[in-house]
Image (cartoon, rainbow, N blue to C red):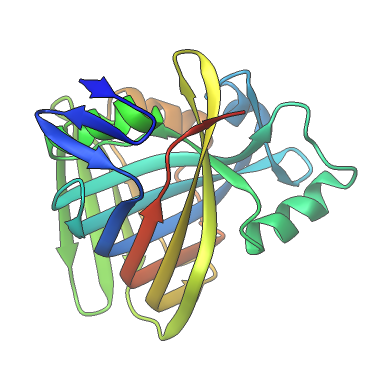
Length: 244
C-alpha cells in the first residue's frame, strides 16, 4: 500500500478522492442503550451523545453496495452517535436530537464487516474503519429486508427492517469519527437518498454468539428499536479523512 494526499494504491488499484458510491440500498435500526455500556466500546477520544438521561444511540446497519468505487459488496455495521471528547454542548440531550436530524452529529463505527477483501483493505487503511471479511447474507422480501452476519464462523446477529418509502433527500452530509494510528480523524461525505422510509420501531433483531453478540447483549439488546430506516437507492461521495 502506498498513499499521497491525492490517492492511495491498494491491492495494485488506485483509489482517488472523492470515493463515489453510485448505487446502494441500506437499512438501519436505532436502539437507545445505557450510556455507560456504550462508553466502554468507543475510544477515549470520543464520547457518546446522550438522547435521554443515561441513554445513548446504537445503530445497526445493513448495506447492499451495487456500484461503488470500492466494489460490489455487502456490509453490516454497529455504531454509536458520538462527539469529539470535550465538545459537549450546553444542552447535550436537546442538541443530540437536533444535531442528528440536521446531520451535524457524528457516528463512530465499532464493527464494519464486509464480504470482500478490497473494500476491507481500503476502508481500514484509508479511513480507519474496523472492516473485516465475513459472511453476510442480505435477503429481500416484498415488505422487509433481512441481513444475517456470520462472524468468524459464529452467527453474530440477524437484523430485519421494513422495506418501502417514498421520501427523497438531496445532498445531505454525514460525518464519521475514527482512529488512524491512534489519532482521531473525521471523514465527511454527502449522500442523496431515494425511496426512503422512516418508521418508529419496526426492527427485528436476533442475537447469536461471539464477540459482537456479547457486546450487543452488554447494551441490553435485543430490545425494541426506537426507529428504522430503509433506503432503496443511495448514492454518496466520501472525502479523505482529516485529523481532528
